[in-house]
Image (cartoon, rainbow, N blue to C red; front, top):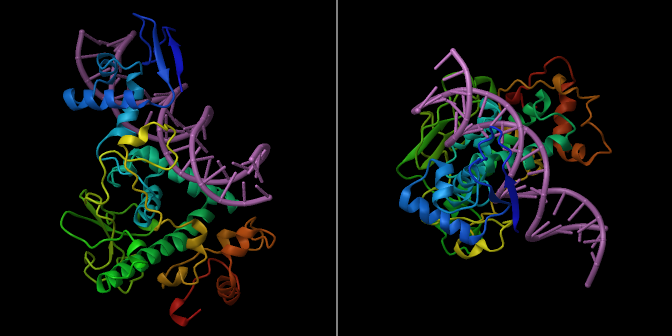
Length: 345
DNA sequence: AAACCACACAACCGCCGCCGG
DNA sequence: TCCGGCGGCGGTTGTGTGGTT
């Protein structure tokens, strides 16, 4: 695509250059442009993007060069589908910081703010729309907190268990291709995992490192079978080893690359196996079983009248499946119903 | 086979804060 | 102190791709 832009309007926008009328290219980057940028940065380093663009002979704005480098060409950019662990982390961090994508991205090694933002918009907001509630509404946050996130945890556990099974039976060709969860090694990031109500306290910490290690056994109020009571057990949840040789690629690619010429130096590394949809998460029969002492504000969900409670809507039929409906029937309504899980409701 | 649609994501835009002259 | 350039950030758009009808 050869999209060019005449830049000479003399305003304060940093894309402009008054000294000369430059035909600045826009749109998808070509292979040649990418290689030029890569080579230039390899020799001169990054930064000072406007002068870099000029010096490298790129007919691009400095801003465009920066974006291309940071979001695509950087060697440590990690591509492929967002893993379960990353999904969980994104939900958690978004609950804490909101749309501060760059800050969230700091805790997902190799992921860019753009990628996380896209994930949020395409996946999370889409499902909020399906539920006919605002993504910032209490209803949706509760849905994430009590259904989606626990389901993710459950999936992660299942994947870890599968991984263990694979280790025990390495000849299994089916299982061996179905998980990206690896065992923990050195350089571990520990993430004490708290619920949304605790997001503002000091218990939530994320330390940079090569791995992310989630500890799910704290004051969230539940404990998983894998958890130890120490809070930092290495037995609980482990993400992919972001930097092992299998998962980190010099330059990644994706299935929807708009630049058809760029594949030659890209390496496909999609991991489709841990991709879990929102509905997959919330329709699990055991989605709630990880929360033995959680207060669940069902009234805030406006059960009888809420738009999502609509038998004609597929979202409803998926969300409030038989088991969940039995649960709700057992509650009998009321204000801020407390679910006493230990009584077997 | 073609048309249509939904999705994913690369890239752009506008705004803002920082910094140096 | 002011001003302009720059980098960073969040929001938005455009488009290629794959699936469905």
